Length: 469
Ligand code: ADP
Ligand code: MG
Image (cartoon, rainbow, N blue to C red):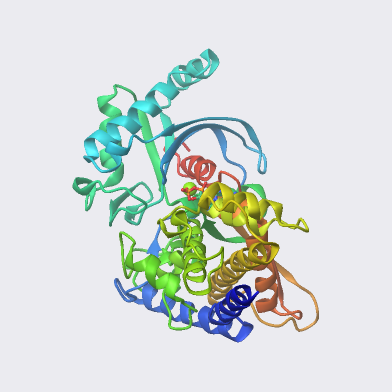
């Protein structure tokens, strides 16, 4: 029919304005590299990328041994973990964890209340130890040690101290900003009458990188998370961090937390939906890259496009479904569900449209258009994420052509719900990365899912920075 044709035309235009051909991806990657240099040159050298030195100079070797705790605070759920490391390459003898929802009022309350809650949860988890573990700590006279995975921007002052720069992802604990986050946590642990030492403060991407090193390969150079938000860290040459004015680490290396979600570039193919998402967000003008590729926004972008098609091309008939005009009704898991539907009648698409937007009946043509919009956005997100990773690889000299056909290896440790569950997004990302590297590349690059990377990685880094080594 005429209206479907009009919607198809809009969808084609939308594909055009969201497209990410290879030359554009190279431009995006190059723009990122330029910002990386600026951010490493001086404090505030880039107004986009913080390029934070993490004080992690030694990543786990696999020989770490003993029982360590970790606390992982970074989204609405927070986790405490107990991990027993075997001391042989990549061996984890046992692990247990407990996941707790942070009460919403604590997310916007005082630092004392938040940390008393977190310390209390850790303390009662420690109390559930087996007798044999308790006896071990009594006999050895060692204090229990924990890593702290904290996925908010922090200016670290050592591997176990750092100042919160600002909160993200719905947290707003104003009195904790500008103060040492580990001291606040450590004080709360004291108030709980337990002795637990925080030995490492770790961004979640750094935990993922550490976990990747421990599990897979010493060629793991990047840790990247694509979940609710997105961020990446990588192993940099310490002497390339020009703003670093402390003694150079012995290893000659320094892990840099990029805070890459705030990257922006005129090459990013933005649409009206991106403008709207940004304008309606809690942080307009910030985190452009994050808003285009991560899970917190993908569903909303798709909804905005469908709403425009319903209004301007009468997709779904003459009346615009009310739910389609409501903010945040479509979640990113819905988008991946639609995208993964390859049934001939697109039955899953029909069901999502019914469940989410209360659209009772749809034609196959309409469902095809909905599927198409999810494909366009998934493709754009995955390919832009790949361009970001390619930029990092370029910065550390792991791109270029192979002279004699032999390839060296680089591993990228990945985590985050969007990367883990949205299989099509992930394959777009992988394909684009291979495209960017080229068929005659000097390096073979692999993306590896490092599940629960941040928590286990924090425990590993507590081990490699243990006071009792
Ligand atoms: P966080 O980023 O909050 O630490 P996760 O890494 O678990 O937590 O990521 C959760 C995010 O992953 C969700 O906000 C959602 O956007 C995305 N996600 C979860 N499940 C799916 C799914 N099935 N398909 C696509 N995206 C998903
Ligand atoms: Mg997380």
